[in-house]
Length: 123
Image 1 (cartoon, rainbow, N blue to C red):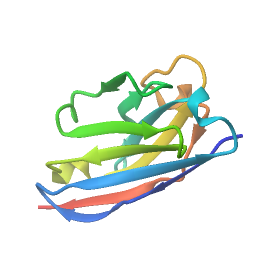
Image 2 (tube, rainbow, N blue to C red):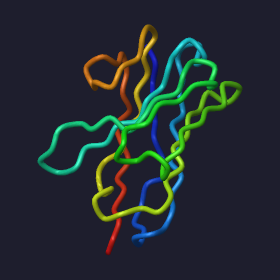
Image 3 (cartoon, rainbow, N blue to C red):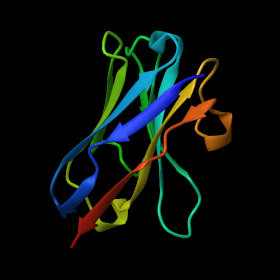
């Protein structure tokens, strides 16, 4: 089992920045590719991006490319989501997820998920 706990959400004005963290425990963190998803009210889970096991490869959805950056610290068993130039449409609950095999962009492909942290962007 892998436990994931997100933190760092909150209320921010449009154009501002937030940094989310996801702390993992339970198994060897570097065995897992990590991803971030978000879910706005009434919508499906949306893939934001992922980072490889070693952290040397990242992939982003077009909606956040150039504004969001994913990084990880395997020594601390943490993954991060730096969000810049936030927009009201970024308002959602943000989740981290872990996958031990080939990571994709679908929520159901991942093995473990956190409980989420709320991000609200005011206009």
